[in-house]
Image 1: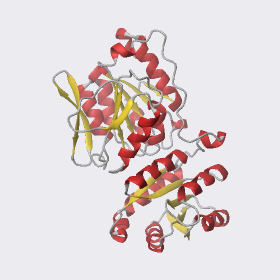
Image 2: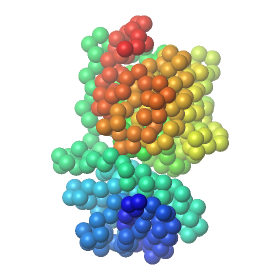
Image 3: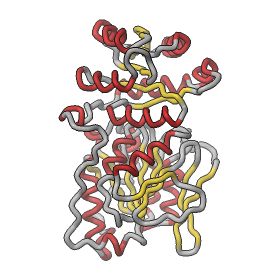
Image 4: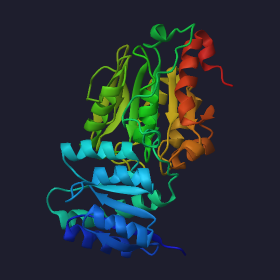
Length: 364
């Protein structure tokens, strides 16, 4: 069996040692080298040809983000970021995902040695996923454009009824690995009077705040972390807070956010399954489901439940996914009405929203 060859890049000797030990304990991977700064890492990449890099953010001579940007321009390859669990670390991590990092692990600020050992399973899982991810250089890097620039908004249908329908309808999105950029692709194309949007992206506590703020700066709609008990309104997108379960509830005629400390579902908190089951129950045929890139099967059964209750569901196709696990499972469960490339989902949804009347849920 060919082993996954991993290069560790971190300025901390302790972290390098711990990550090397964690990786080498796995039967299917090996740490082929460990570098204490990006300049040494650059030479090791040339000589060792690793399959995956784990990359720290804060390092001497060149920080991890500068190095990642150069790496993605000159020799794109799968990278898992090792981020600090701080507000600044979360902002930098969002930048790294925009630049093309496949995923990240949030290392603790205190108790580093024990903390990393506790994260061993997560680290090796994310390295495995990165090694098989469909990796692409971000278009902005390829074209020399500014990272984070919003794509051109989708043209609204000429017979649009979006504004009138927006109080009745709800868009429900689930995603995991590769999902931060996929979600951005959807949200930046939504008009200001879009229906309410509820989102679960697998992400740890602290990072969803920066994720929501980043999206809010790019979108016509308002994007925020969901808060317990708040009304779910048109023209807004609500992101499940990391480490919490998020579902849609009702208060009279209004949709409200329910945010709670529920148990992990499918090993995840937040879980797409929890959100989608609530959308099936509370929103029914007024829902539109979207399943985006991600590893595993979280949300697949619940998306079928949404479908059975009358929602119209879009699933991202394999060619445009970073990881096709969650979309594949949704398709296998019979949950998909349309399977589309990522860049076609928002236009298709807006066209259907603009079609009006009972035609909204006439399935193709």
